[in-house]
Image (cartoon, rainbow, N blue to C red; front, side):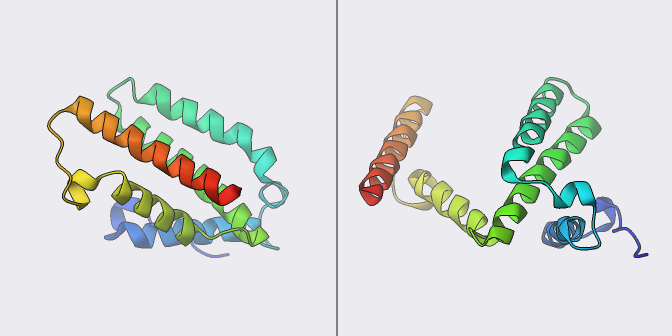
Amino acid sequence: MSTPPPPLADRQRPEEALLQLTALISRLRGPQGCPWDRKQTPESFKHYLLEEAHELHESLGGNDHRHIREELGDLLFQVLFIAELYREQGAFTLSEVINDIIAKMVRRHPHVFGDKQVNSEEELRRQWEAIKEGEKKDKDTMAS
C-alpha cells in the first residue's frame, strides 16, 4: 500500500499539490481504485458538484478559515474529478480548461493586460459585459 500524500502545509508549490491531487483522482478511477469512483459519470456527479458549491457558499458567510479551506478543497476535488471524466473520454484535458480560463480572464481584463482605461466600477462592469456579449456572438457565429 502506498503512503498518503503529505499534508498541504508541507508542500512548497501549489502546482505540485495539484499534480498529486490529479494523480489521486486518476488512481481512484483506475482499475485498482474505488468501485464507486470508477462508475461515476458527468451526469451522476452533477449532484455532488452542486452540494459542495452550496457548502462552500454557506461557509463563506462565516469567518472559519479552516472550514472555508475544507470546502474549497471539496469543490476543487469535484471540479478536477469532472475534468478527469472528460479527459478519459478524450473530450479535453485539464490543461485545456486552465488555458481557456487564462485566455478568458486576460481577454476580460484589458484594463490590466492591455491599454484600456476604466474610471469607475460601473465602467468596468459595462466593459466586462460588452466583452462577454462579444464572446457570445463569436461562439454563435462559430456554431453556425
